[in-house]
Image (cartoon, rainbow, N blue to C red):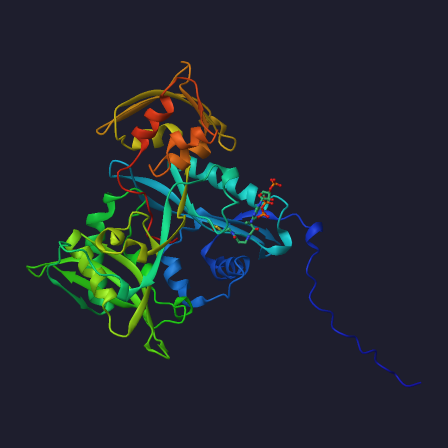
Length: 428
Ligand SMILES: CC(=O)SCCNC(=O)CCNC(=O)[C@H](O)C(C)(C)COP(=O)(O)OP(=O)(O)OC[C@H]1O[C@@H](n2cnc3c(N)ncnc32)[C@H](O)[C@@H]1OP(=O)(O)O
């Protein structure tokens, strides 16, 4: 009898059925970094692009990155960077800049995010960082964890030809385009000098500058390479910087190019106006767009036709008070304030309780108290109002802050407010 060998078909590698697995919460190690990056990209439904990994490695502290694993595969991720954020009063405070939060589609809605957020908040509290902040991919996700939309951003767009400056707008000096190597150190020095002028700004060490200026082809939205502009004042000193990309276009009635404005910062009105004028006057351009601008962007105050600056407002960063007492102490208040806040915190119950806050433009003290509260609110409302961009009075009017002493919400709103809108130019 012929010895016939059975042809065994090779079985595909088995993937465990998600509902039968018990994912394990694990910390990242550098050896596992590429697989982690791949999982993060998959979680965001993005293509994995290893080109950025080298730069990411410079800012990733693996102790701050966690995720659930099934076997050797990451099925979720969450991390944070240790940075500093400017708070009202122009002080810089440590913040956990939360990032890379993903759960793979097959593992969604079984509590992995909730478990990671809880662990992360406890880790941040143990590290002594009073604040956490994040950019939310979807606005619905983070309120339940105490993160409030504390800053807003404006998307500005319009016709470059429609924007003439008002007479009297200061202009002095000139702009020049420079190579990246010349731009980065000069812009970094200016940014460091200006970082405390607005709540919500983050410190930007060199590695973060490299990431900020990383000119990824996939992020160009059809435009060309990034260009670097410096503004020089009348004496020839650099006092402003901007980045932009140009999207070529030619329609039936002629040139139709688009200027995509990235970073833009000037030390005074002349620098600011000079940079905008340079970008708006580029030949062959007819349209401009700036996707992440502060809501109090001065452009509308510089031009004769403010309506021609189309403005769409949406959220910028979300803020979470991790150590309520320390966070309240770390900022300054626009007016003298002395009130008792009753705070509720579900994830970090040690924060729950009453605080007597006494503060003003120069100082703030915070002490636990048993005194009757003037206002009751949760960490979500406190995070929302913390940078001074959302009024505690409005949150009271919306029924989210309870007022026990007449006038306390209005007084708190004035004291917590900021004369300049909070805004974060950095994505992380
Ligand atoms: C800072 C950043 O990195 S922002 C990036 C956030 N990540 C993404 O957008 C990537 C794609 N999405 C995902 O990876 C996941 O869907 C996540 C991370 C948003 C949610 O992960 P999950 O593990 O499904 O969350 P989990 O099961 O813990 O849900 C907790 C609660 O939040 C709700 N929830 C979670 N995600 C969403 C969402 N996108 N929209 C509305 N509600 C949501 C859940 O319904 C659940 O509500 P419940 O407690 O009332 O039942």
